[in-house]
Amino acid sequence: MLKLLLRIIPFMLLVLTFTTSSRAQLSAGLRGGVHFAHMGTQNTVPDYKTTTAPGFAVLFHYAVNPLFSIQVEPGYAQWSTRISETQTAPNYIRDYTSRIFLNYIEIPALLQYKPHLRKLRALFSFGPEARFLAKPMHAKTKVIQYYNGQITDQLETEERYTGDLGVRKWDIGLVAGAGVAYPAGSFTILAEGRYHYGFTDIYGHRSGNSSSIYVRGISAHAGFLVPIGKKQN
Image 1 (cartoon, rainbow, N blue to C red):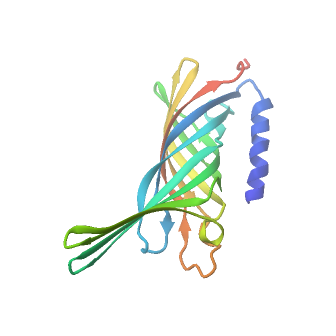
Image 2: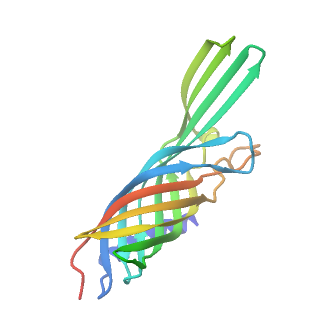
């Protein structure tokens, strides 16, 4: 499936670049936003906490007709999560917090439906997305120990994980979103919320691994589109 997507996406971009018709219009633009990962897992330990992380993409938008379009969005997305644990004993507390960062090149390929909503257009998106690890997973960890309410030890570390200690370098999933599009002269302003559902167990390659973890969560984006060339009449 990964090889198929790698062949389909460049072909779609080529079609978007050279295809025109009386109803079709090619646009390009940018979007930026934040991701809220919840890291799907079948286990309750560790308890992954939702954190926010940035993302942005270049938009290639092909309006097939007034209601339907295809949009390909190569870009960057960081997915981050946090593990927090507290151990207690008489007169003793140990707080452990580790924030994990996954940096991906993401390429969603979306079919969009855009019905009129008075002066706005509603925007519904659905399609596959491929993500590729841009650099090794890394984690920032902080440990604080207390005795009788006083800090007795504190340690902060940052580590990178590769090979069997890291995560898989690719992931395949689906994304669905809803939002609005507002025509503003030659620009179209976009705002959309999305849900991302990863299919790949990112730790599944580890020998003896007993847990399954998936990149899943929501994102919120805003951006714009600008027409390329003149629309055919």
